[in-house]
Each structure stands twice: as C-alpha cells, then as structure tokens.
Amino acid sequence: MKTVIIIGAGPAGLTAAKEILKHKEEYKVIILEESYEIGGISRTINYKGNRMDIGGHRFFSKDERVMKWWTEVLPLQGQPSFDDKMLGRETKLAEGGPDPENEDKVMLVRKRVSRIYYKRKFFDYPVTLKAETLVNMGFITTVKAGISYLYSVCKKRKEESLENFYINRFGKVLYSMFFEGYTEKLRGRHPREISADWGGTASKRFIYPCGNQGHVCKSTTEPQ
Image (tube, rainbow, N blue to C red):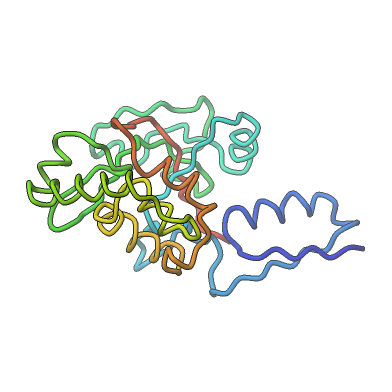
C-alpha cells in the first residue's frame, strides 16, 4: 500500500483525499494541516449559533465535471433560504434540491456581489475601473495612481516575486491599495516572498474592466 501525503486541509486537499480514497485498498492518505480546523480560507465557523464565512469566497466553475462532482457532495438548494425570504430575493432553485432551512449539506445560489472597504469607501470586488472607483479614490490619489501606472509601463521590474508582478501591471499605488495587504492576509506571506507564478490567475479575478455580477454557488456546510 502506498502512502499519499497532502499538505493543507482546504477544499483542494480534501477533494484530492476523497478522490484518492476511492481506491483505499491501494492508498493510505495523510493530510497535514497547520491549524486546528479544516476547510482553509473557505471554511465556515459557528460563533454563538451564527455561521460566518472566512473571507468572501464563493465557488464556481465553467467545467461541468467539477460542478457535477461538487453538486454530488453538496446538492444545489431547492427551496428559498431564510435571507432569500427576508429580502424578497428570487433565486434560481434546483428541482428536488434540499431546503436550506432544514438541511446543512446544501450549496446556496448567490448573486456575486462583493465589496472592498478602503478608507471609508466601498470599491467593487473584483476592482472595476469605472467612474465610481475614480471618485472614491479622489482626484489626488487617482492622479498618483495614473502616474504610477505609466511609470510601471515604461520601467518594468524583474518578475522575481508576486509583488513585482502586480506592480508591473497596475503600478505601485494601486498595488499598495488593493493587493499588498490583501495578499499578505490571504496567503500569510508578503507578496515579495511569493512566486510571480501565482499572479496569472490571481490578477484575472481581481481587476475587471467592467462589473461581473454573475450568479455563483456558496457552500454553507461546516466541515465535519
């Protein structure tokens, strides 16, 4: 029997373990997790009876195989949830799906609306380059960001880190505002300590030229 070691008990690690254990007669799985909880930054915690998600994370995929895998584990909601009823919100429901009021293992359908609260102003997440964003930034900051961006276009840094990757594409001002602190909190390391290879997918979902308000799914189950 072979032993498979997986680092991290987040969604990716747990999914890998579940798939490998379909062949449990051939493999033994060990998951190494530095914290005392599983679920990573996508976990849900229960605080005094209130469920709270760590971070504004949602699940969505364009790959039908991935969606099928997850909906077999967490079926899409079939009845309105409490907040749907309270807000009078219409949600696309799955026929025969579970009722969130009675079931824990259910994938809620949510409209993708996230915000960054920065200097007492709300910015779209992913950040959108539109008039409202520029107004929230203010004239002086907008000018500084513009000059910083132009400088980054003219003088590229060697992309030895995620920090330089971001600065090359957005300028140092926007990097300091929206990427530096966020990335350090999310990854537990400063961007200068992270490989630039992470930048390809991260930046695609962080800044869009226009709003992306599509529907996505959000898991409400707590790790067991």
